[in-house]
Amino acid sequence: MSSLKEILTRRPVAATIRLTVPAGAARPAPPVGPALGQYRLNLMAFCKDFNARTQKYKPDIPMAVTITAFKDNTFEFTVKSPSVTWYLKKAAGIESGSSRPGHVIASTITLKHIYEIAKVKQSDPYCQYMSLEAICKSIIGTANTMGIKVQKELD
Image (cartoon, rainbow, N blue to C red; front, side):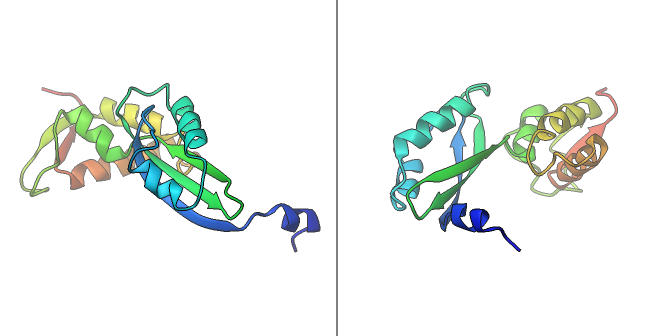
């Protein structure tokens, strides 16, 4: 049973907005402006806060952000690190994965690349309780579906 204080402090949620915004480049222009504007959220507050939180990343890295908009026109948001596929494409030096994974190899990366990506993803909220080994296995699975071959060392 919830306590009375918990019930009183719980704010009604108007919407959950998911966006992909370049690191340090949130501006009131589309896609951010229209997405937040329809819920009457403070655009400048979001842009300043998002840019401050993502300044440690290189500019233009696509960051997944989940914004919870409340009915009282306030909001909270969480920023996730870039997707595993984005990291794999950067590590492999390719624009896109194989059109025929399992038949055509798009590129090759090493286990060291996988480990480095896993260390970055470990800080994500949904990976914080996973072991580094489990994250690595997940990344290897993603690499396989993209047609990226994983080797111990590059030849």
